[in-house]
Image 1 (cartoon, rainbow, N blue to C red):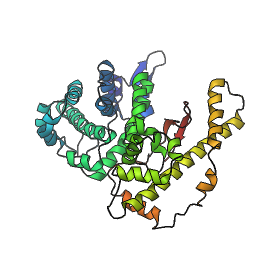
Image 2 (image 1 turned 180 degrees about the vertical axis):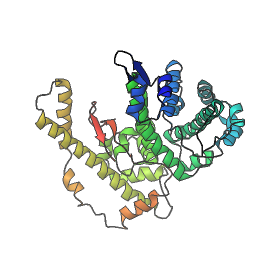
Image 3 (image 1 turned 45 degrees about the vertical axis):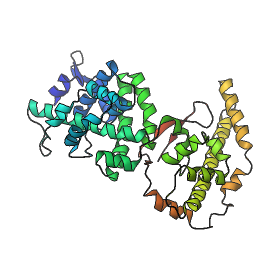
Image 4 (image 1 turned 60 degrees about the vertical axis):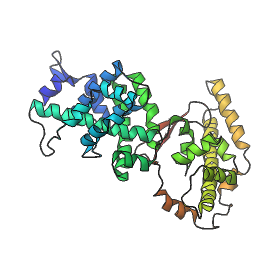
Length: 374
């Protein structure tokens, strides 16, 4: 094991101290919790991407943060061989950059699961198999972050709904590991690009919808409908009339049934508006707390923006009373139970993170890092 780690560059012998010490690669693997085999694979692909990263779409970046050993479809090789002609030019460029081809899918052999590879040929086969499976999974994730519905993705790639959700959860966690890996290696620009993609992966949306995804009940489809209708920020939604929001959602096709769609959309809209107001209130309290802790900020321009935001938030009339439950939620039916029931059949994925992630505050208009925990 020691010889393997030294040969692959994870550790290096120091003759002066007569001991081994970790290299940058070793530190990166340890910090990111990647095992040496997967760490070496990720390292090689990152080094290759640094020289030839394709940014015409999200696929190449998504490939780098796709879990190495997640099996979504045991027949993925046959699927890719049959559907290779459906890939567009940009996807084919990425495939060529990472050395994935239709010919390889046709003759790909599944490695033995019960035993570890013992020969060089077995190791090469395992590496090739994981790379081709990873590319297949990255195509799935690429569709999800570009707001394709869950039903469409399941049908297109012949995989189950639970399997897709598992892949999305694992990819969100794995992207955090790759971020740490890149940071330890000193790949600053690649780290920043992966960081910007991580939140999109969690919510399954494009970057313009991220500010809205902090609001409860505003999954990908609803966020897109509201965004296209002009509700582009949390504040605009917090100031909207729930009846108007309900009409926008119903007109956009975010319903679950013809008979009580209007009823359901009104209660969802009311919850969305309430949730937006609550987010504004929470942000106001956080900024006011910051003002008490540090009344003399170093950056006068930034602090002026903070104070202006506090004043703007305070102008919202009776937010606390509005959130205290004075509005009638008992009419028609129990909205919480109905929403929970119908969430199970919704087309989009909204994954609750299993680990904390950093998101820039989109409410106050300045870069204020906020850590959200699931």
